[in-house]
Image (cartoon, rainbow, N blue to C red):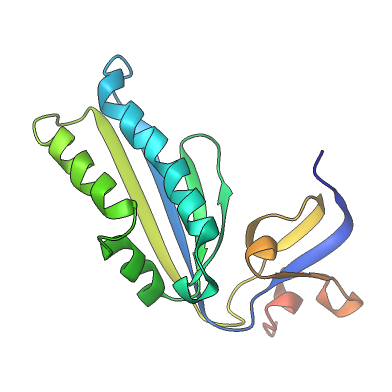
Length: 158
């Protein structure tokens, strides 16, 4: 069982970073042959990214259920380099998806959102959870008495 880290904690990343959300929506479940390859490609890509050296810029990921996940990257340039690299699993999976979907309007939806986050312009808090999310991608720190509210953690004046 995963170790539960008792108490309240926050996440820290000392510099700018990128949050990349990606997901799939199966619009026509009976078209198994259209969505199964998309659904099974992501775990292989995540394993590849987990094995990547630090200079690849991948910081980690967190699932949002079977159909979506969050990825953390050192920079937009790192994310873009991976996405466009023909030496990694993402490019051929993307090409194959587009080939499969060429005449399949509406069978499978995919989406992504990219957020470039400036250092200190985020807030993440965890209580009684295993190491996850931004705290896993960066580092976890215990809350101090001066970080009790989101406003305090973000250093926002009232």
